[in-house]
Image 1: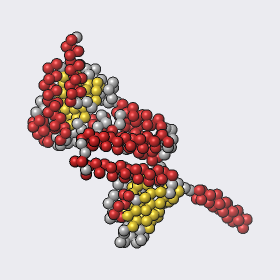
Image 2: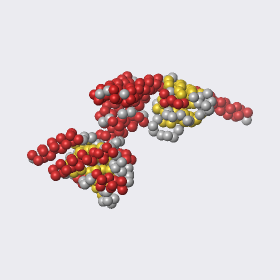
Image 3: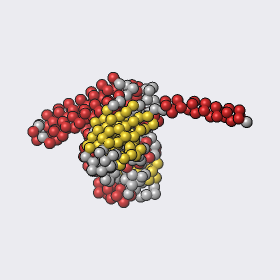
Image 4: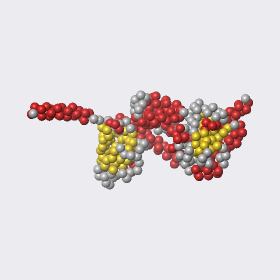
Length: 371
């Protein structure tokens, strides 16, 4: 009996000893620092940057502002927001193996210094660069009357070029850096699919499953489906009467100007004036216009149609804004947004307006008339 108990004890000890290395080898990101300007202990919440307001970690500072917490390896390689109770803005840091040091003031937490690990050193350098860029932009805004329009444009372009050069340099020199990936993703909504594709080739394969990479790939895939040469995604939605249906595919055989707008969009309402001119000039030649409203209020939609005199085809799913399934299919992140579609349903052009659009339509219909 004693021998059996001894064997059980030895087995239990062996299991314990086998598990000790796994605990010792577990990797964490330790985040510590100090927030000055506090008059009492303050709650700190950590959440994923710009993706969720739900905290992934909460802790509390000491009265003197010191704080410390850890994040597991499963949370590595993402940017996090650190929010201090009572403070405006957030400090940002990258979770990775090692110790991250954050020091800042309660009143200007967004200017906190973050360092201690390779990625956070990259991030801190980028923050310094961004702050300098902001100073130049603010100086230009506050002293606009001291410059001619040409000078303002030249200064603005120079600042923008510096931003592009900084990003390009970081991406090319540090293709394995999550900070480089994050910064490359910032202008995502202003990029065409081929620009996004080009960036993704730099970061693949190391980041092929990273959420930042996947967000960029998803955006590129959507834009590819609504680029010139692609067949415009079909839709079947309602007309202003609230019951009748309208489908894009029912206009096959005709040229279609598909214009996304909304009653609450001031630039869209102004653009309706030009759309009316286009319609009156080219509808007799065979151009159809479909104004797709991203309103959610049918009364507001109808009132705007009457006020602006939109006498052509009108459509909406009344979901509202970019939540609209049709808007999502077209990758819309801002309006007005326009597509010109040929009789086969193929997209001819996207985003063109004014004289450029009119010249293209002149070319199309003069050629058709000649035939």
